[in-house]
Length: 171
Image (cartoon, rainbow, N blue to C red):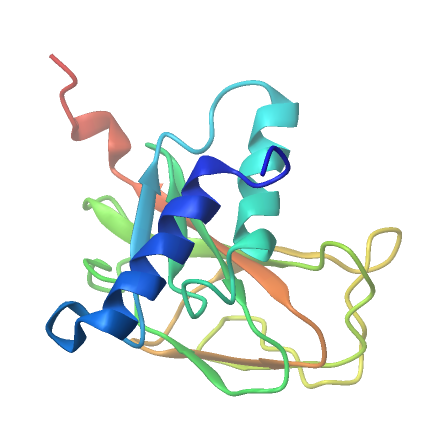
């Protein structure tokens, strides 16, 4: 089928094989990390974001996009999402150690998000202000707790900075 991506065919074949051979069954939640997803042309970055929506169900919302500066993933609507980013530095004011950390955003792509409630952020949202382009888009917020919770009426892209990226050598 010319309208199906090779990765879709491969995923479908893997599911078919796992039904025949239970010992090779795919895990219920599969985490997939895509490195180099950002940092190029804007249209290519939007294609990466589109993949979050396109593959959300296939990977049980376990798809994360990375560059040297940022990570992003899609939060499903209607559930209490708990976010625990690895390697968050001690809650120092300057956030100079390496890891995902302090600055984050909640981006409503595709439609207005009527209600968003958060905990663990410097500026938590209480569900009364919708997120939408042309209105409020939650950018440059700060992670202040070990666990961030987000519950929203519509899917949101969560993004966090990769701090200390300048200490990584690419030799």
